[in-house]
Length: 401
Image (cartoon, rainbow, N blue to C red; front, side, top):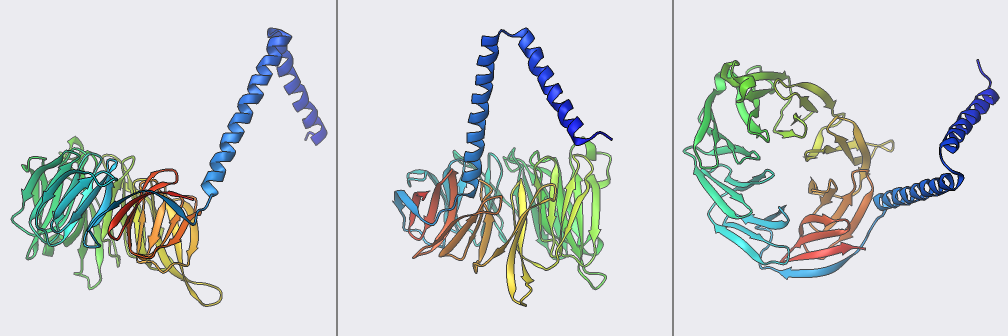
């Protein structure tokens, strides 16, 4: 075995040979200039890296209002960002405005329980428990689909194809509609044979669909996650069913397709990640030590908040986030008594109880903490420290400080 002194000497000789070889090929003046350029580039890269690190750990407790749009709307409306503008919806209709409040278009309707799903190019509002589906783009209403049965769940793909789950007595009906409302595919699910479907999800290309189904025939709640493929990979499968996974004593009310041909299922005691473009397989299973109180996700990250007992015997809320490979990003104790948690478009996590708000970066740093004197309905990230605050009776463009 070589001694450390020999290794250091060999390393010195190796680096010296490199410099000598370069020196043999370049004039002294050119070599000196090249070294200065390399050193300058390294210094610039180091400064940029330090700046990015500092920015990730910078915290804020106040903000500057850059502009305000007064509105008569209150908590009866819900707000989301869509394609750089504000999409406001309620049981009376939708308004699409810029962040300064200028109306782009509006559409009136009546829904008992308006529910929103969006894709890259489309945004859909459907009446959960009702019979109406409205499909919008940035230019306004594209189509209305009227169903004959009450809607239990719905989703929309990047090309505007809609999947709809409807229920009548002991039979559930699955339908796929194109942007004009034409039926592309349909099927029936009978409770006594396959269970009761509680959630559906459609892939970005509308070729794949997953369905969460519960079955209580055994006396306990069991869940099956079924995958259907409507492309060439599913043509030879019976009813286009290409994969099915059954879980005992688990209820799975939330499912979704995410990035890179992955899908995810959120159960009450575990989270399952699936992968595979044609025939899905289980990629990762994450089990809860304690039941999840809240779950959130986007296409890159997911997480949950659970109650744990610390060493002093006190109950505390713990926020845990993961990437889509199932690796933990961070775990953090949460002091805020919250009633809503969501992951924003910039991958920051927002917790709020209506007046108090906390923002966490994807690294677990508490970026922003503030208490408002009125209700906060939503935060929409713009760039860096710039956000839109949707508050009671007004929409503010702000910069954190």
